[in-house]
Length: 258
Image (cartoon, rainbow, N blue to C red; front, side, top):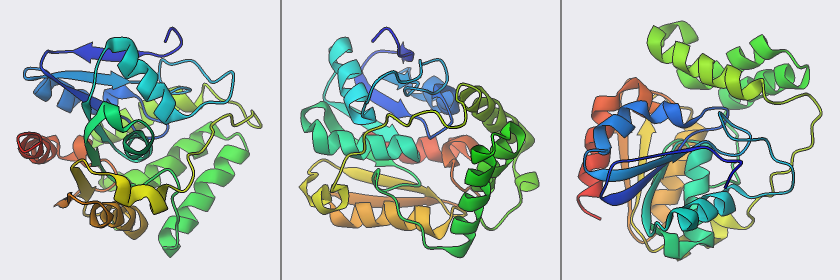
């Protein structure tokens, strides 16, 4: 585990917080301070993100998570994630079910996403074109479109939240170069296997997120035996950062039931 960074604070039942793509563990700062008084909060930086090293060999994010939890002697844990982190949480429940006692997602279903909404596909194309061109500033701003969602402009975001998102994106994007090998190995057949998840699943979506992101999280919740859905008004892809008070309350209520 020497190439991965993680935060491990507090005592109690283990609560793992998994960040979104191009983010790092600090996107959970408000949750870490809130929950660490009653839970053992573990917040890693995924491989190639934040303070964790870039990949040098093929890897799966779910296996990295399982290796970390076994290294710490932790499990089963409540695993909560947003976007990429949500996909990793779901895949952990599929691939390493003995390590997961509950799953919380936001803005994602599994690591096999699909996008059909015109705003989403257009924004994704703009963002990916900037990354393919190696334009760091344009890549960051393309990424920020999803933080605002289809119903707002980036200028509508709280300035502090926007600054934190840009800071994290800059750190992680700067770790990578155009044309580098993508060594991430996908987990396959995830949607077909979702009904095999028998732990409680909660989807906490931002009401202003794209229809695709909301839809995938709701599809996940509908497909499992114990699935629940909550929505936070006035937020998009990162409700835990935009309205940490409401996010914490919803997550806290869920944790008391599992």
